[in-house]
Length: 384
Image (cartoon, rainbow, N blue to C red; front, side, top):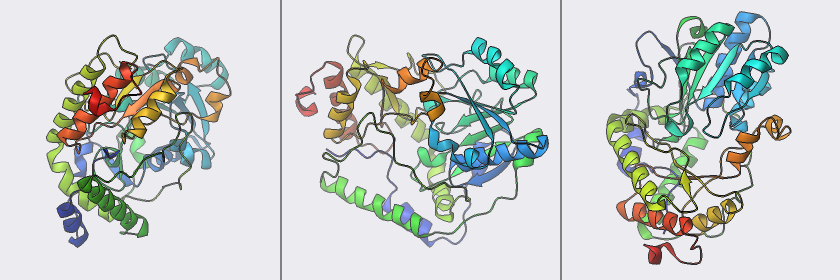
């Protein structure tokens, strides 16, 4: 059975978006209040680079950017290319910042200009403590909410700037939203839109092909998947603005965000029940708080079983992933970043998006049950 990695757009929505001349996407959905200024980007890496550039202008030198060591290296491409100084602070096994170690490191690194904290996998983390630390250091707090569906009472409320990536959770080709307030709003400029270029049309073609193959139950994965230890291949740096196609699709797909959240939460609970309490797999998070819309289903496997579990899921047609591609600075100092490396070697991210049909949800749950029981020789259909 094929399980798409992301939600696929409907043919009706695609046709309507391609035919429209203007878009009316409710972009302020991603700002917690009207005091925030927003700017649109194709990818979150461009948004993070823009806010680092703004801090650099204010300071008159390259910005000092503190980033958690459990972080996607490709997301830092624009910041690196602009010459800003990166420092990687450690997180624990729950992905919370190790504050004593961070405070101690200031003697060596100096105070940050930007402090990036991440709401991993759409779960809310302690932004209040991060805001207090940033205020003491004279830094801007950046809430990386790329995995969050939208702001909540605890996501996007404390940062001087927040970055959202609707393209990660909704069936749109690209799109990141940077919301800022106060001094950090100097990063903002008038929002401009790109064009429906060849790359966006290629996205349309791929998604339509996947929809046809899913409907026909024709497998397209087989043995073609990345191994658990491999990082994703580099992709072109995206610093441009959100495409018009994405803006138009957001106008249609962002209307039903409550239904998107409900579906993702229901799938999370089903998958959590499937792996049970005493199997090889365990959820990264012990519970699903009321306001959380999960990005994926993140599970931890024993380090010596993660690769074969990942391979089994992919052979079944379930595109699980390892995450993230850790920065080289982190990998070069394993003792200082042991927590991030340990999670990278154990965590499997399983899709749970709103586009899954009931039969696909049951299939994924059965496969997770088989993995958790160590029955990798059996098909998920029989395991169900």
